[in-house]
Image (cartoon, rainbow, N blue to C red; front, side, top):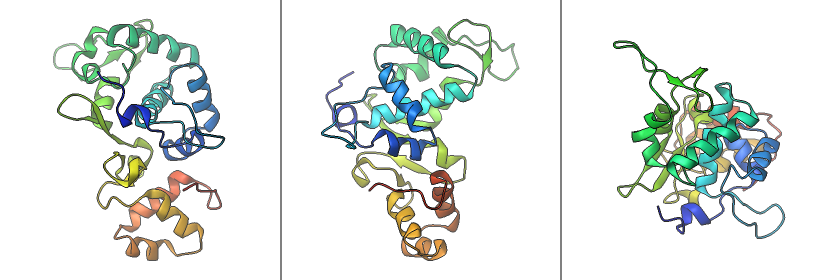
Length: 223
């Protein structure tokens, strides 16, 4: 896999911005980056973006592992095993979606729903990492990472994506390609959510999802 394209090298979000969009504490993202679990790039200066698309995708998947019960040490061990099998970008590799059974052995009996064992020790059963990977990440015809659907918005019923073909790679609503931060900033500036929805050709539920993900109404929103 080539790693010199903009999805690997162009910083799109700061750790704070990624934390807002992914509903992950900024400190957690910083810890993952310091541990080498995220492929961040060098910043152009303080408070400048460091996370390309691949790093945001990795953070989302790591957050999923944590929500499913893995602790920090366990996540690091799991990532090491996955990278040993699939290479440095294991958390993004299309192979993980098609050949993940080499590490995530199916424990189900015939006729039962698929179950997957924990990659680090084969003892605890987790929801399928592979199915989640397929659901939220999309590859192009060459198998390169292309589009990330943000799980944090999906939980509130809105489809928000990161795709460098739209909105300069910033999180946008999939249907209209309007940047999420533009919508939230309008509400924080005093506009009524229903008026913002009308102006941007969005549903009230989409605007509501964005506000829910950003949390406190007075939160700062970086453009």
